[in-house]
Length: 457
Image (tube, rainbow, N blue to C red):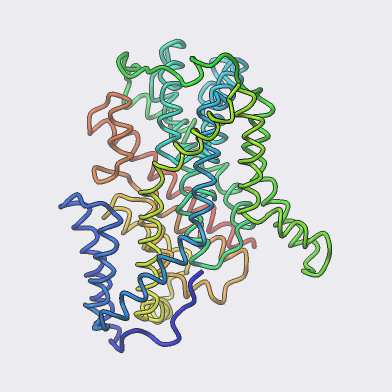
């Protein structure tokens, strides 16, 4: 995590700073929505605009931005890369298909929406949202066609499982960056994130899909049913081995969090060991190395094929890494301009709970930019000072509140909106009634559970 500047890079008052923040965010929104500029460039230009509106020297703004970009990529870049490799191994080896086929073979017609939410949540753990959609859509369409289900009854639970994982559960880029920005504990955030995710995904998935299927009663579009990756493989990894590989990093990180709570002595041997194996870097690296054997070799991949799979997994995440890095630069520019102190002053006057404030800021940026990741990064940067005096559990809940806000009402400025619309063969109105409403339910329901947890913890 980047060290906060000792003194702000500008001596602007709260009024000028407030205007500078709104102007900086407006520049980002305008460039992304109106001029269709890549989010990396928009965030970079927005950061420079923020500094100049706040009256900071250009050299200081550039120094803040580059420091934030560097520390964010250093903090989460390797984890995003390892997550991408694990996801690609899972997809190419047929491991994802194996999980899908095993669960579907045991699911009755009545339990099919529940099976879909379970599949999406498991597969969604190591995969980016877009990759998860591309992997799961063929399954959703096939199940809906073969079982003669309304597409929404099967599709909404799958989308809900993926979306909740994307917004709330590390190692997805948004939650990782928020954990980094707010100095939260990854294991505790993961544990609380799973606690919030389970009831949220049930309400927004299988339960809401009943209503979505009535509002938009459509069948799977024939032309969109593509070939599945494992159809060209001679053999696939087993269900048990695939599941164990996906859950390995989660288990290692949760063990570390538990030992930290129970033992609470950094000099103790057990805690020293779990601190190493449960660190996100080692946990994900272990899963990737294990996955090369349990997934890659089990599918009959040669050493050359494994190397190619790893290489292909890294190219698509270049854009994600740059956006996350630039978001970190924007966050650091906000902090170094003294915006954190301004937010602290305002929140004292308004007496808005920090969790609600984090959620509201993320909602506003999500509605404006369409990007959940941009919303998470920006909101985390704005509320970072509020986390300074928080307990470990409340800092983790603030990460989750920001993540929940970043999922609110996906609409026409979100790439995910168009991806779902095209794959499911819906028009814009149908997509709003199903996908956009589902995203809003996830955002609001998860906030309710986060606020409940904050009362208990």
